[in-house]
Image (cartoon, rainbow, N blue to C red):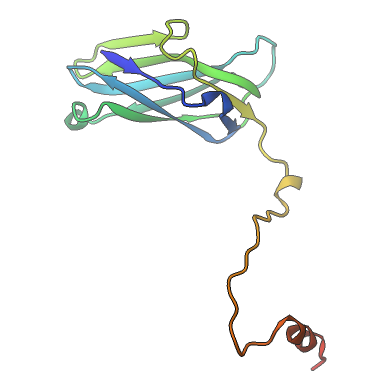
Length: 156
């Protein structure tokens, strides 16, 4: 089995608690890959009542187990996840024959994959979302802004 995870600027990745992180895993097994399980964890050793583990798995149908060498795994970050720096703790592959192969943090396969879990936006942050303004064009023969104001302020 060969495995490759590449960090392309992963130190800048921020995931909001309650959302999903997508990991792209490159792996091949001559017997096919039937399942990929990924466990992520928070680095802090401080005790907290927040969740410090997040999981994701991908089940691959037998007919597709030989077709791909790149997989996307969705990790659901719990809404009550601890905030701060996270990383991958374990990746477990189950091949087409049912044999499991596991990789752990510290084996230099994915030690450089890091991300930050941040708090969801507060209600105050969600009141107004103004994303920009642009000029869409000008149409001849239509009332201009001053004309619209006059029409708006006239009483019926």
